[in-house]
Amino acid sequence: MTVTGYAPDDLTPGRPDGSGTPVPARRTAFDDLADQAARLPWCWPALVTLAFGFYQVGRPELWRDELASWSFASRPVTEMFSAARHTGATQLAYYLLLHVWIVAFGDSADAMRALSVLAMAAAAACVALVGRRLAGARAGLVAGLVFALVPSVSRFAQEVRFYALATLVATLATLLLLRALDRPSALRWLAYAVSLALLGYVDVVALSVLAGHAVGVVLRSWHHGDRRQLWFIPAVAAALAACLPVVLAGSAQAGRQVAWIPRPGLDLADFAFFGRNLFYSTSVATALIILAVLAWAVAWREAAFMTALAIGPVAAVWLASQGTYSYFFPRYLLFTVGAWAVLAGIGLSRLDGRIAVVTVLVIAILSAGDQQVIREPGAHNWPSYPVGLGGYYVDYASAAAFVARQARAGDGIVYQAREHQDSWLMVGYGLQYYLARDMPNGVPVPRQLFIAHTAAEVGTLYPEPCEQPAACLGAERRIWVIGVGRQTSPYQAVTPAQAAVLRPRYRLSLVKHQRSLTMFLLTLRTGVARRSLAVQSNSGCNLNGLPLPRRRPARRRPRATARTRRAPSRPPAVRPRRTRRAPGPWRTSCGA
Image (cartoon, rainbow, N blue to C red; front, side, top):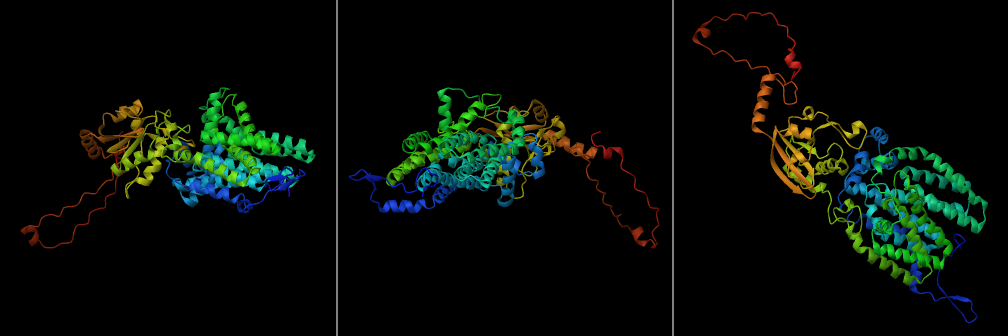
């Protein structure tokens, strides 16, 4: 029985007899085993994706984008909506889902990344179902397995970001579109419209999948001539109208989120960088392109539909990136990897089953090295693959482990920010995340200094620095200063105003160079400590300018003498009760 009118499920190659009539080839035990596996084509790809996703899921350190997700999702829901007015509006749906996930399973790296692993496994199942609907069960099984073996799929299955969820929803929208095109009905078109609207709230850039959908609908309408397929237009219009608020909010915040992406050109090097970083493996990308050509040779209609889904969104984003802001970055178009996998499944489905299995094994071997590279401790910090930047990354975990071993109760800490210029490195969030897990029992995390308001209080991604550092300095006897790179002085990592406050009061007592970070320990100078204690005892105020608690002096009993012992006992005199006076102004206005 034909699934879509294009290709049958039984794709066993045939041989012509003497009269030219094709006769099915002799089936082997391997063919029977392949057919048994193809009965559930979505199950095996999902299991393989789960295995690759959970393998060493906690080994790579959290990098700045993941720390941003943790920062947002750890806040109360009301504060998340408040922050979305300034930044992160396009990812608010993912942050809300991650917030619920953290409440249920915790905020460890393994727990937070498990959400993306499950989403990517579901995406692999949808890829297999798309392949089955287009070209049969065997094509779906191969497509799903190839998708699971692509290194970029495993890489973003272990990312605390929305890319895995966007890949799932985009692939689900494609599957629902095929169902609506095969048997058009109001309910199926409604399901497709809902999936598109959900995709817009997960990732606005992923709406570029509509470019591929539109081309696919034109091809199907031209082939079938069914006017009911034109219901695609009102379904898309309704979906875009539903997600219009998040599109407008994302456009207003684009300058703070994607201004760093360069505008793409027609240079071949740009497209080579894009292809290499879309799959995270040059060899795997080459193999998928060859299999896509094979798909055009064996089934051009199905190949044309999936080629539109593989190339159409890329072309649409490239054109949109010629405007004010660029969105042309490989991970934003990760959902197109599924289309390339389906093309590979279509090409291999018409060949002998043993050839298909060998090809899948070859892809697994080609991706093995890159699969291990993406699990390096600093791999998530690398902006490009497969080379990376020679192992350079901001090692938050090692720095936090060193500070935790040396920390004492009452310590303060200052992170390099340069008044927001270096805030994008997320040094503060990285150290705070790992310090909370490394601090000894009973020792609190060092208090962050020179902060007027936290990021949650002001509804932004970064905390608001104190305009007058002297007013924000507490009574800490020891202060940690965390600088970026290899620095020689702690005052290079702070602002000039902060350095002017710290330099006369503290002296440098410890320097530790870690990978890409430098830790300085400042201790209060001896003279300053004694002077501070004298100020506290004379003025009744502590170093923060707050009144010290008043202690009632202990009464001393008079020493008994012979005269007092021989004195006759008499009742004590009753003294009038004195009214307690209010404390003087020096008690209520310390430092005045």
